[in-house]
Length: 548
Image 1 (cartoon, one colour):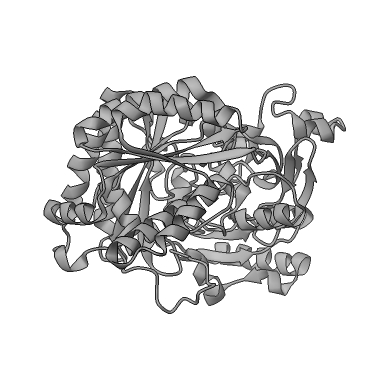
Image 2 (cartoon, one colour):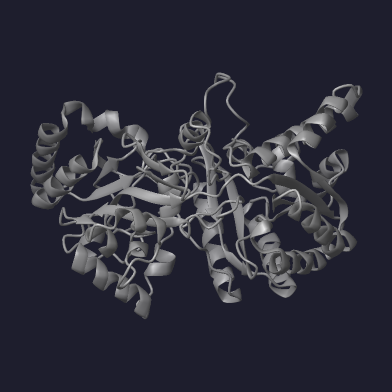
């Protein structure tokens, strides 16, 4: 940082302290925790400022503009595996919006909620329960502490109805780099209620430019919530051999095409991914820098009676429609899978009670498996759980024993190494086989266990999530090399990620011949000529920025 930059920062900090109060601005060691992340990057954070409302966000942005201090807004900063709270560029001041945690409005008739960036999955769940409102929270596997608004802006998805979380966003407000407030044309004209009920507004649709971008700071969002259905059933199935995968993909696609919204997202997981949820990491059997030997995987899978691929899905509907959908699932998926079973919450509870009387290892294994299914069913019912989040701790030695029973997991705080590779894969047997072969070929070369999940995000496409698990900091370079190899080979085969971690965005945006990223650059320059909001985040940085 130059002397001029230091002086500008001092002036901005003084302005923020005057406008927001001294306790709302952190510097030096007090801001160090914001740099902790799971992907092994290091960032110089100039300051942290914590506004409590939209007016204070405007004040923060104006001081940033006047003093040319770049800002990096976060919602709760719990963006595990993509960068957590760390900024994309060195020298940025983090704008921590977690203190803006109000649920501003819920319309029980229209089923929409308006909330601020700091509202977490658990907070909304608690609010809906307290008010006895019959809606599902759009949960993700990232856990109860994660921001709903932040996930929607990353175009995240879940496995409940309204699984595409930005598709459920009706409207938003944002502070532009100029300090002006952005809202839709309908909202500006006084149509607040209809703005919350109709996504597209009038004129060019601009809300979307604030997703995966650096064009403003979103301060509130209205989200459509799915109603609690009359009946929800979880179903599980196995694809017994590796060669059954193609038939399973065809069956899942046929179900998505025929059952529509009544069928929630279906997850297909390979046996190593399932083992990461139910078995300790076999560190004693793994050479340093190597993957788990096939013989060990076979032994673990045999002990748990796991097929090569395991599937889980859900049916949502009424007491009349769910049985009809169940029959369809049995007819389409049953002949192509093994162990197709259906569970409601009440049936699962009864089985758990019966299993408590089964002695020995079998009873313990069954209770553990049923406990995982129970937590999965909770997620399908819109209740956040930490079931999937425990994956981040698998290779790092498990959840720290020092954590108290009521402590929430925080992989960045606890030193977990996890980096997500999340490509889109066409829902065809040929594409899925090519993709799986690619993962199984590349990951072991870098000592990364190939843990594969395929999640239906439409009737045409899977999103796959590959957790690159590694030890921080010793294996960071190798993990990053694995990510690059996956990206490049995936690009060659036509599998491209739907989102990137903050250290890999250049793999997309640094293409000189890209009309798309040139257009993004022009929009960025028009709205943010000073490059003050999230420099380096999903846009090409100028040479002057790179030298900072």
